[in-house]
Image (cartoon, rainbow, N blue to C red; front, side):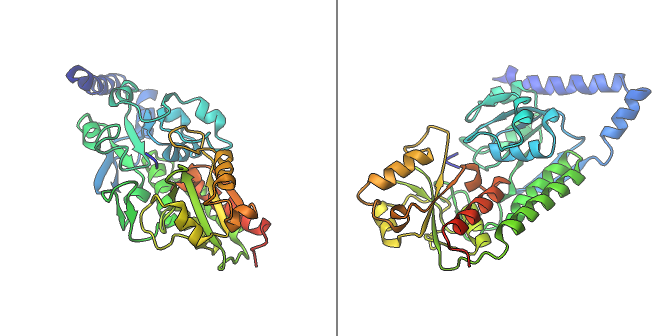
Length: 347
């Protein structure tokens, strides 16, 4: 969310050299290892209008967004990653050691050249814009060099319009199936399908446990990602929508189909949400990024200090990644569900 010719020849030459070395050394144990590593390949994925073909399991993947990075790390693939980039939050709990073993190319978008320097054999991203015009590079630029690319299907699923401005809009609600589909796609790309199924099963169980017996149909939620002067609030149908449906509540801006529209505080006051879900970000791109700064603003600004949720301090704090369509969305469901129970809204 709130998302030269010599250089170009280098990866091609490196790939060619690797192929020659493989061909020359493919005997005995090396031949058996190579045969094992390529079993089940080539693999072809249908991805956001692209056919992505991998001739063998990636060994030097570069992940350009935190969401897809955390999936790869959760699948135990840190040893097959050559770099990560574009972080909004600390890495998911439990993945700290794995993350520390992978080079960080940049905290934000790296240059195309920086990615090429990592000699990738597979490039992934969470957003179409990351591998599109104005992003790191367009997918075709990597593919011309023989480097397959993959974009999270949650950002190009049915009904998602990425050309409508801002963070795009959705005519159809995002479902958690898109998140599970990304896990399965990446597991298949790396030849670790069993790990993928175990991860999906674990995520589904967490949702079931968090929402068991929870009924909050009369509760309205507002999701605030960033910016105090012209706040980015969640529309109906992105990751916050999936969280809201999972807990059985209502989104105060369910009539807005933009992913993250900027809505004035007077309109917020008119809607007067019961609970405010606050993005607790560590980046420094907008005003009021941290939860502490957001709460300070809410409780001091004349347009917001009399909101019901503010007066009763009904805040749920989420990481930025939990507000994006990633495996952290499950974390968002757990935390919002827990908050509703704590506020006495669970029936």
